[in-house]
Image 1 (tube, rainbow, N blue to C red):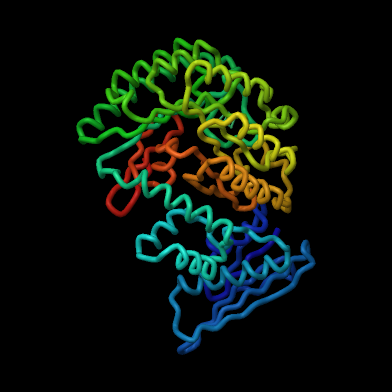
Image 2 (cartoon, protein in one colour):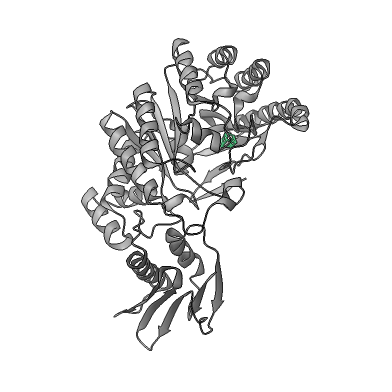
Length: 459
Ligand code: SF4
């Protein structure tokens, strides 16, 4: 286990995050103001003079046969943020030289890159100035800046008519037909007897919560802008349960039919013509049919009990029934997949031509079964190439990137990006990922996000 040693500072959070850009699954041990161990450590030192501050980083990592160091002195007295950012840049440079890895978002770890771009544009910088600043200060590559700037401009149009009392509604069905090995969502396989017994009770509780939420929103004078029924897999519900739930949504939220309304029909092993009919009648405007990959071997390996052909059949069935706004999710970096395999899956999705294609970089959280199977030193460079291929292929096919977010422990610190044909942006995705609108969330594991002046409160 590598030790992070802090002398004269406590920048643990940021330094651990930067180290994790290179070793995403590593465990670190932390010590303060003590001598480092004999080896396998990274040391961060801040020395305060009377009118100057000097910083240094020393890295000694036997796994990379590496020992190296950097020093930096400020000519003017810096504040803590400036010291922290400089140490992060030094660490990034050292680990880049040592490992050959080049995380493309540079030292941006917890922040949302598009938000950062938007903030700079709003402060009056033009695209070129944003680019220069983020390259120099944050080490973001041109490739990623192209993406973030493009998305920031697409979102300007969607966000320009947001009103302060607008909100969106999220509903969660935390059940799935089986559990995927990479899953870290609140979701249970419906196969067990207990889950089968609980599902109808869960549905009743959810409908009750919906009624209360509608009353609350009305009392507060809020205006509903979009609805998202996700989970889990909402289509694990039977056709009649789905009718019951969507009927309640229609009853309590009278604007259904006039606003964006997405229902995740994520897994083809849960989709039937009857359920698609129910969704069509519900006022939903978008559905999601998620292949994740078009390789049967990879699907099987991650515990999904359907084939690629099942997804294609469902997609055609939905098209024949008149669905004209379909999203497909893919994941880059699934275990057992290769760069070539991923490109083939993306090409297949692009040939099917859904209105939206969302590409996620694999996220391995501790709560997923996959976590224990991966080594601390996985090489994630192929995933970076997969994301580059995605951007190139989909933009050439007429899709625009319109939202982007990153999660902790995403392989290679990469991103998830939603692409859409112009005019088919999933507005809910922008609202929730940019944290610009209150989301009232109903159901197990669902977190409401309330936008208040200058802050966001999670409930
Ligand atoms: S379908 Fe989605 S929510 Fe369900 S187990 Fe798989 S990843 Fe998790």
